[in-house]
Image (cartoon, rainbow, N blue to C red; front, side, top):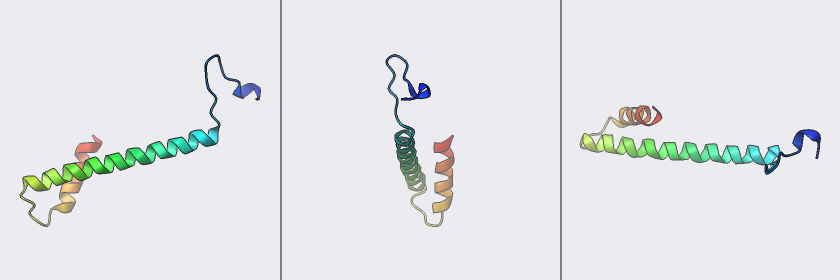
Length: 69
């Protein structure tokens, strides 16, 4: 182990490739959770209007704005 990679007492050194893979998976999971939250919020917005057709994009964009705030 090089001088740069020596862990401090009690620390675990995780190779960069594993850290990167883990971070990518976490980001994908967060994106999926966010998409599901937006989908649910859009559903409730549509329900509020009685599911009148032609407002799907409007519902999605409004839900996206609510969730990402």
